[in-house]
Length: 255
Image (cartoon, rainbow, N blue to C red; front, side):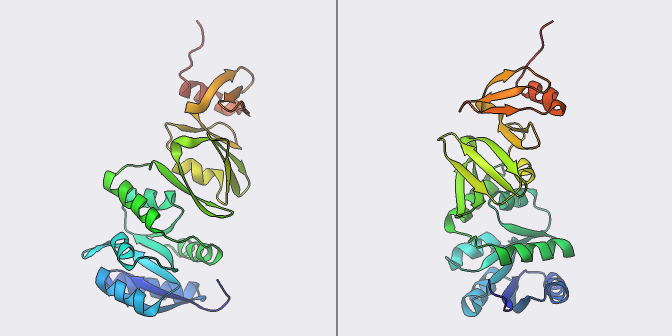
């Protein structure tokens, strides 16, 4: 996005929430200019169509329908979306898994400025496919989805979680190694993905590695040991993680 003011609208059924957010934006995010507000799905749709904002601050749950319903109604939009929610655990997990931004009420100043900064630096659109995946996960109320959206160097890659062999972290980037021998480089940290992926399947075995335990073919003894993956990759296990890894592999030492 350019250095000019970024136009934004706020769609939230609570007037006090809209006023607080606008005040916070004026004080802490001078690059954002709020050009309109709406308190319902129908009013929000009209506002977006008429004003064509660059950013939409969108409440997930409103009496007249959800923020996802609104996005479905307006169809394709070039606007960046920052979701707002009170305490819906499943919604937060879903939004994070699809590389989208959200703010948790009551809104924290640091989280607001971070979300705005990310919006200015990225170009990820909320497509119909992502919306459908979000709705599917929310409807099933699963903590973890079957698919994951990865912000990559080329845009957004959507993969199935079971296709991930392991992830390798390198500072602010993570490389995904998949079971078809392909790989994807993501602009998110390994710690981010450690929080997103199912903990009963993925285990942090080393500072650099997050491993899908289902693709481990062999464990080689050593101080920490080495995991041999299905693609023949050898992954070192940190000594501090050895017991946890052996437990995950259902290993029991001989008597």
